[in-house]
Length: 381
Picture 1: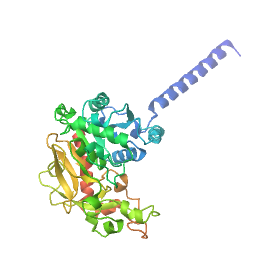
Picture 2 (picture 1 turned 180 degrees about the vertical axis):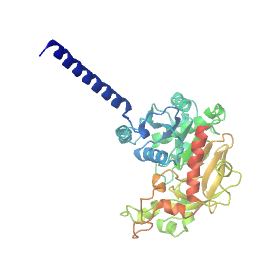
Picture 3 (picture 1 turned 90 degrees about the vertical axis):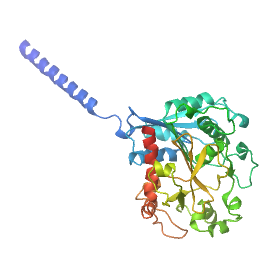
Picture 4 (picture 1 turned 180 degrees about the horizontal axis):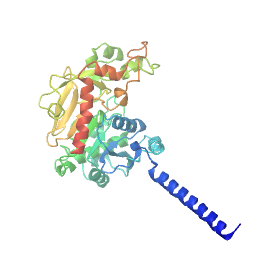
């Protein structure tokens, strides 16, 4: 082979290698490393949520994907206390395995005694850090509060399973909203009245207690004077506030639908003025609680009740316009699914769809969506 041919051959090889390299680089630069769902948010709306179990994270994930939470980008701070009974390792693994880069975890540390919940304490700087990095916060459902927090004796029906969680969330809500238990304390929302707080079920009860209120520790016995499950189930649907009663009689039924009843909405409330609902509306809601608000905390106002007026179903804050407590559950994603079915009653076919049930009983589905539209729009303002 001549020297000229050798040089020509080497040139062709180098040119081929260069073109291949460019092609690979272009391929890498245009291939997504994360899907759109898991892409790190840029100008994301940031909010926090307590009790970040897998189910709760999935609820937020699915509602965001399906525009029930109609925000373009979100960042969720998942908050829990290091000493809680709940193991959040599976939730952390779910977030990691599914590349939910918009979810980060924040652990509250340290111990605070009951007498120090309603004042500055070891948790105060940690609460303030979360408050400063977020536009709002969701306090979710769960087990009963220890009655000692609101200065009552422990009822035989009260079931305290997560005391550490109860202590820190009560203190957190007090730091946010203040209340009659320490009138001299300046709550965080005094500096940011546009901060959004949504309390769901236990979150609503904890909000009330944090502001100085109390609870009925058992609805059937203390409100309706009933002592057995059978008597509870003989009541009309709008007086039954939990599916636990039917499940206690049919413990082997694993696919029973949750419990629903209607609510009454009050005039000139957050629900009518900010969500656009009418005080004539009586939407169905998913209910799952055996305790309820009794004495109402400072600066809180009742804005919805059960149909008989005996159970508080929603509260708003008189000073802070973006604070809402609801005694029911608009967050389970099964409410918005077409293809998930339950048994409406024991022994019946598994053909009861929650979404269809709400849609065929207007304005029930509209009401649920308006709650999340309100939450999203308040965060985004």
